[in-house]
Image 1 (cartoon, helix red, strand yellow):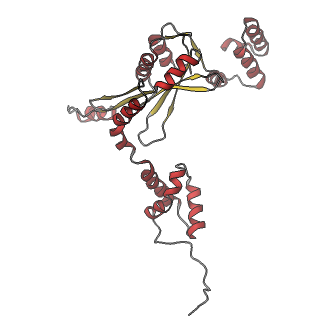
Image 2 (cartoon, rainbow, N blue to C red; image 1 turned 90 degrees about the vertical axis):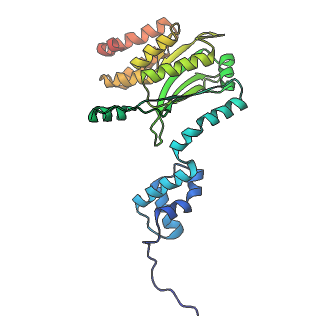
Image 3 (cartoon, rainbow, N blue to C red; image 1 turned 120 degrees about the vertical axis):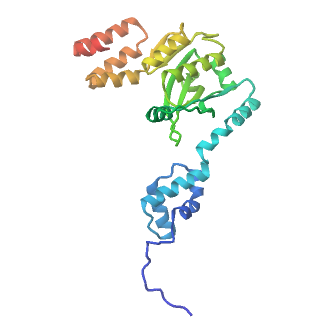
Length: 289
């Protein structure tokens, strides 16, 4: 029997849920973990003819990412195995993970609220330092003695941060030296990271001379660099200086050109000339810089 279907399709379906949706598109998240919510909604409408609410698509994305990437917190238990594998495959690498005991900041606040004393002896993750031997040798033997320091957030549920040390290769491109994962970017963690970096590089001086270290002018970081690398000259990132320059109220293309000419000048005469030009345009900006 062949009957003609004369009713329109119904895009809403109560049989579609986030678990089914995550299983249906797990391969998409495997190839692109950053697949967006809007893209997932469009794919479901195109492939299955159903309208998926954004909230359901968000839950499906979370479940699919857990299938592909696993539970972030559970992976911390395998860090030592991972680092040992790196050391076995690349002997000479400096791979260290440190732990700490005692209450966290949140637990300390809870202790003060309830005025109750108790101890927590279970070790927790503190920091991970990672310097592959091949990258270390390449930096020491083939790159100029320059180290750039910066940190960034990790977009994971654990909310940690990455601290990175980079150099410049022969093509003036970024050359990774070492990186670390810590709970937050503060003075204590920067000191721990720089001490590990100094140990990995064999001191504060290479075969091409003292390391010049560049940062974003964080007060805590400047103090730590002075402590760990006391003989290394420090320089500051022009982009961060210009951001502070704008925040101070000095804006405009002409002032930026003067600032760039001063920063990129290789001679004292060129620097003085650019600064004099800035002074003519805005003496307050010249004084700030």
